[in-house]
Length: 93
Image (cartoon, rainbow, N blue to C red; front, top):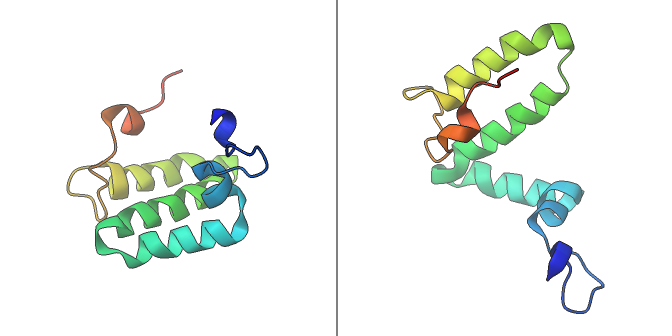
């Protein structure tokens, strides 16, 4: 259904609404990721990206470098090989 709304139009069923905007859904989904071995790196990445969003501007370059080494670089501690090269490319401009 358009906009993630159900056929009845009364409830949003999109991933974003259920797993990002809703605190209980977000908590449960993150616990699922962190508790499932094949998805634990994705759960850790999500947590670190949220922490990155809260960083002061002066801390962002160092935090980004740590994220890249840990999650986006082959051989990193929690390499997320499922991410596309576009998702892990360095920002331009």
